[in-house]
Image 1 (cartoon, rainbow, N blue to C red):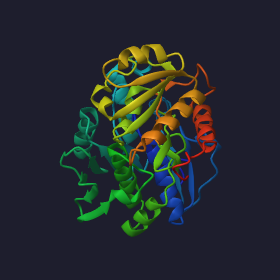
Image 2 (cartoon, rainbow, N blue to C red):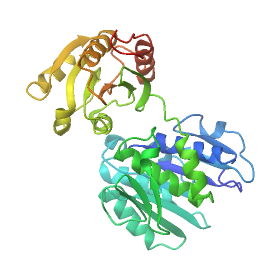
Image 3 (spheres, rainbow, N blue to C red):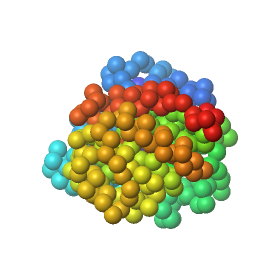
Length: 356
């Protein structure tokens, strides 16, 4: 594929790469481009069909895959962020950063490097690439750093031409983390030659990814959201920051560190409903931080959360499955867990005082 004339867009990062990959592919498709998408998300790269001249390969690339593909040099490379992950595999943080850095190998032609600079390892890579010929470096910041693309008052500002995009018009992309994903996807599509107006129109139609803050339905003004992909505290944090009044379904097979780091968000929790192996440890952690009740199984948790949410009827509240745990104690996968949640929610009835 790399030797073909079809451009390759490669996306990596510790968090957000699946959403960004899907968003880029969606927008290119919506704009009439031929797209083959795969890698760490979807089909394996060698199973993809030929995209042909004028098309694009959009590839999600994990650190493992980057290590194993020393000849890959994407025309457009996207590095979202780097936080500690898979350190045993890579021999520590330096090895992990090096694997991510390898996305930006020189390909003997002009290349675009789109890099989130809100963590220091990624910022260091951006600074180094800016000194190398052959790369057009586009920086992204959603936390106030000076960058090519910046978040300001729920708007995405492109410093190159002053373009301002209202992020509130994209309901499938809530939260600051999705602002980063949207900014990187926007930059990739601009580098691919798509007009801003087309990008924005396509982004408004993005349905979101299953099991990643996916709205299942609303009942009586309460949203029921499936974030089953949140298999650790860092991932759950992304969802918890998006809502103010949360009936939180959490638990499963706990990861190292449990819920540590989520303390500042516990004032958003109206009640936690705990399931799976982690329920006793999570209950102990939640003592004095937020109200909770052990439920054991997902069906019991959904029923209890639904009953309380409908009875309290707080405007803008959400019943949120964001487990901060692996699923293997009670489910085959996080997808299976999310599907079970959606099925349970779709079977709920509104209370007599509310309408679905």
